[in-house]
Image (tube, rainbow, N blue to C red):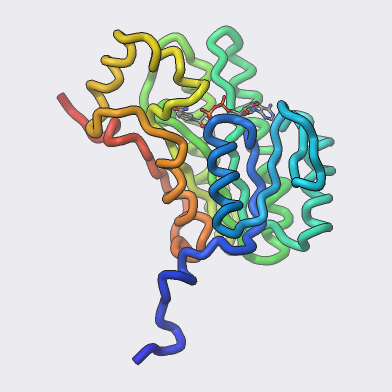
Length: 244
Ligand SMILES: NC(=O)c1ccc[n+]([C@@H]2O[C@H](COP(=O)([O-])OP(=O)(O)OC[C@H]3O[C@@H](n4cnc5c(N)ncnc54)[C@H](O)[C@@H]3O)[C@@H](O)[C@H]2O)c1
């Protein structure tokens, strides 16, 4: 017989009516994830530096390094919904010609926006932050030290926040996509040599697609992961697990 505390999968993984803030929401991954969250009942607030602002559709055009504007947006969202359940830090750049810009956007801006949103989550003693890291958080890759350093730093930032906010029931975790076929990886996908090099490393022998990331996101923002914080989840078709 079912007891009061028995967990029911439908409720455990529910994201229905969760207030989710997504940065990088116009990008390949952010757009797909925002759509899937909405289709599954979440209320999604999208932020990106590109696209056309549409406040009725909860789309804010903003650069995440413009901290003043981001603060206004977060305050506006909190005023409207009275809570923020999840923050997905998906906005990111990979600029091999500008070392500092990678650090500025992928690490410093992610830090700033996370602080602002966490302030709101703390008031409700509940929240989940998902930072988008990378294989570059674990391994070195050539010709892009700024990106590698920024994603390595972000991975650790998640763990630091997980500790600082543990007593407030705000959880922080990393999702590291492997080679997902997006604008960011198009060059290596379209170059036969680079593509083969990468496929040789991927156990599942294919590039991922943005919706391959959805399952872990549902897990991390739902109650199914209520005892999970400070962790790294690599959704990479087995890239990091493969030897020779
Ligand atoms: N595609 C992959 O295989 C892959 C692998 C590992 C990690 N990632 C990470 O996943 C995230 C999404 O990647 P993607 O492939 O969808 O990239 P993408 O370039 O398609 O999307 C990134 C989005 O972030 C937005 N953005 C960038 N800087 C911003 C800023 N300052 N303010 C607001 N918005 C900004 C861009 O406008 C864009 O819409 C990134 O953080 C990336 O580092 C991607």
